[in-house]
Amino acid sequence: MAGSSKTDELEGPRYDKGERRFKHVGKGPKPYIEFDSRRPRRWVGKCPDNLTADDLKDLLKSAIPAPNGDRELAAPKKLYTVAHGAIYEAQTSDFGGSYHGYPYRGKLSRTLIGLLRAKAEQDGALDSFEKWLKENIETHGA
Image (cartoon, rainbow, N blue to C red; front, top):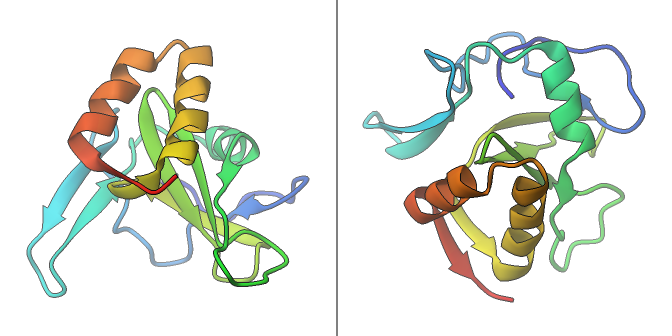
C-alpha cells in the first residue's frame, strides 16, 4: 500500500502515502518483510512496486477495522486486509481521514485472523495467506 501518493477522494478513508515516505516501498512484484538494523531496530513491511492507485483504493475499501481498545474514537486507528495472501495493516494519523498501509508482521487476534482468512479464501489465496500467517503473525487474544 506504499506505492502511490495521495489518491482522489473516495467514499470512506483515502490512501495517503505521504510526501517523503519510502520506507515501505519494496523492490519487486511481491510484498515482503525486511529487518532494518538501524535504530530503532525493527521489521519493516515492503509493498510490491507495481501497486496502482486503484489497487490501493481497493485494499482500503476491503479492509477490516481493528477495535480501538478502550479508546473512544470516531474512526478506527488501524485497518487490516489481505492481498495475494499477504496481510496489510493501514494506520491513520488524521483521525480516519486517510490511511497509510504496508505489509504487516506482528500480533493479531484470533477473531481478526479468522476474518482475514475468510477474505483470503474468497480471493483464492488461502495457501499464500497461511504461509504469511506462519512466517509473520503471532496469534493472541480472542
